[in-house]
Length: 228
Picture (cartoon, rainbow, N blue to C red):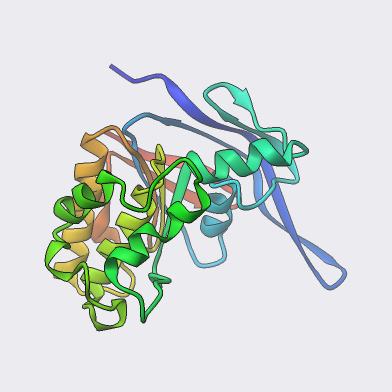
């Protein structure tokens, strides 16, 4: 049974200005995400995958169309609410990790909590995430000394500590070998089983079997390839 939709993009349009010419990237794009969905978004470079993820994470504003969370329309003029939703609803995981290289694993994970005044830097969730992502043995180690797979697990923990419902992963295995890529995808599957929704952009067809939905971004629109 399909779970209720809690994120919806309706007729989204987004263009970018290059000099005097306007280049449309997303064209009346529609997307519905349910709790526990694990979406793979594929498409050629420049097709708008990162732009789509940024709109879902409220890091970018569409030119036209509506974004809805729990059937509530995002009003971009309400900057306070948008900022609050951006902090609490979605979190990003990137290809380049973006860790603080000279700070410990623990410090990197808790860094985002500094912007959530209601959360303690000693929150028990930190210990749970260290255990879940097999990072307990490196929690005091500087991030620059970690392997690529460990760095990506830290970046996932940093995203999860904020308590989001949606994980947006932009080519998260692009810098990893096949073994580490498989381990990261298994972590995402575990998170999916716990009710997280995950949207993954990728060029790697080997990652598609880990996801329950595959959508191709073509000519500014999404085409559903498979839905398991």
